[in-house]
Structure formats: C-alpha cells, structure tokens
Image 1 (cartoon, one colour):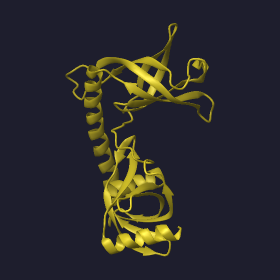
Image 2: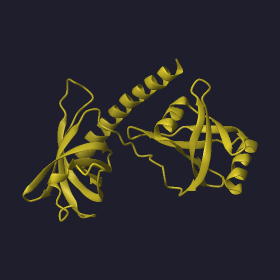
Image 3: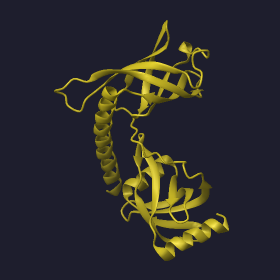
Image 4: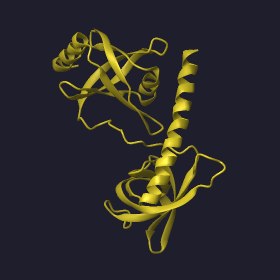
Length: 233
C-alpha cells in the first residue's frame, strides 16, 4: 500500500464517509455500501453486508469506490466474519474508475441456454449462452466449428434463442436480434471458443429480456441469501 492510499483510508475513518463495493454473483452485480472501522498496519477492517462479503471471498477480491476524491481501489480479503459483517482487506491497489463497475443487470442462466448464431449464409452455429444482459451476451461453442474469417471483431450477425418466462403457465418466446462481436478467445483446454458481444434487440425482444433478467435476478438473490445464512450457522 502506497502512502497516498494509506492517507486516503485514514481520512475515511475520520470522516466516516461510506464507500461502495463492487462484486458479482453469477453475473449479477452485488454493490453494497460499507464503512471502514479501523486500520491495522497495511490492513483495513470494513463493515459491510454479509452478502457482499460472501462475494468478496467468492470473487477473490473486490473493487472499492471512494467518492471524495473519486478513486477506485482493488483489494483482497485477509480475514472476515459473516456473523459480525466485517471483512479485513489488504493488498490495496489503484484501478481505473470504470473497472469493476458492472451496474447493468447481467445473469447466468439457471439451465443451459442454447442458441443458433447465423455466422454466415450457410452457417447456423449451435452456441451456448452463459452470460446475458439487455445490451450484451457471452457464449461459447465447439472449436471445431470455428472459422476465423467469420469471427472478426466488430462484425454483426443475428442470434436466435428461446427465452423462458417466470411463469410455468405462460410460454417463453423465441427471440432474434443482431449482436456485434467484441472479443473472441480460446479456452485453456483448446476445446471451446468463448465470445463476448454487444446486443441490439428490438423493443419486443428487449421487453422479454428485461422480464427474464428481473426474474432470474430474484432467483439469484434468494440463492445468495441462502448461501450466506448457511455460512452463519
């Protein structure tokens, strides 16, 4: 920890000004406010919701936004208490102010969400969506289907998939819209291609996405609270 970060944290103790933490749980943003309680050497003890603490441990670190002066820090957990809702952080480092700010609702589907990507006139590739939002998605597919000539950053192509509804009594919907490739990479096993893309849904598709994301977020919140409560026992 450099002297400037140390002074910044000490000032937070004096002013009791809250900071905001940024983590994710299965794609869903987890962004609670908290306060610094004290510093011991190069470590700082914070009071924050145990829902945040659970994800700090799960994500192996957290982003911390300080309002005045506007600063983004990254730190890791040295120790924590779910019962007391405290986390002891260390290894503080400055980061760009936009890093870690996942405010848009993104979720991982509960079940495998298959889709078809119209990569060319003669190529409808089966893909699996593993992260979804209104404005973007991440998906993967078998490397045997990969053609580097088709997967050029900035290229747009249509995607078609079935999106479920919250109610078993109502049917889901097949939606179809364009995506724009933003990053393409191979996994470590070299068996799959992973792609991140921007999404351009029409109003009808966007409405279905918004409803699905809200429902899935509620599911994830219930799941997260149950996991936290189990850690309190």
